[in-house]
Length: 237
Image (cartoon, rainbow, N blue to C red; front, side):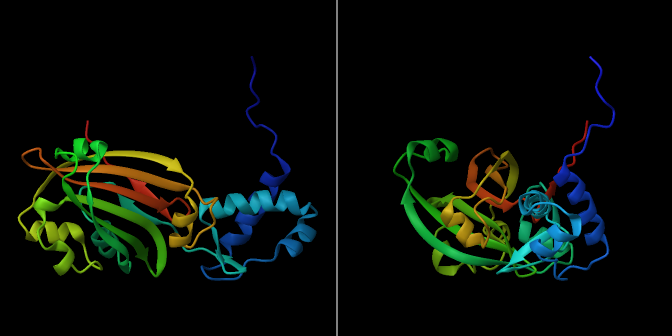
């Protein structure tokens, strides 16, 4: 079988290429032309144009701000590593903070108990926060820690700072983490908390962290915007 070295571009892909060139000449925050103007300029249907715009949104080249569409800033690039993403973002010169969604103390179900090496029904502290960089909501993180490891955390912890730094100050030292990553779409609640459309692609990271003796410290479920975040990983042979 012979495969063409240059497959035919679909109409919306041609439009996308032209819009990419347009964006190269604009700065973050600049207004993006209206759908009607772009459809007329490129002599295509609104549906064809919307396909191209959808790809630009997913790629993080443009973003919605209310009813307006503007040129997006470059994606936030952070390493997949043991540590705080708040600290990693600040190390790159970005402003980073957290918005508290809520605290709760729950009983571990059998699945969570197995992950955290505790008994079903044991108390687990849950902290849910929105992760922001440069005032943009980019992630929703839910952390669950066995209550016996962190007495008084709910009363004393400043949710705006690094939880990992707080745990280190309590003598809890991270040894390793086990991550699983997949792509998902947010549900209605998650989309509202992140101020995004429910069709925005997300990275879903599930992590179990262990101390140096192999005892689990936390289970963390993190949902990050695929249009605003890129993760890197470094591995040695």
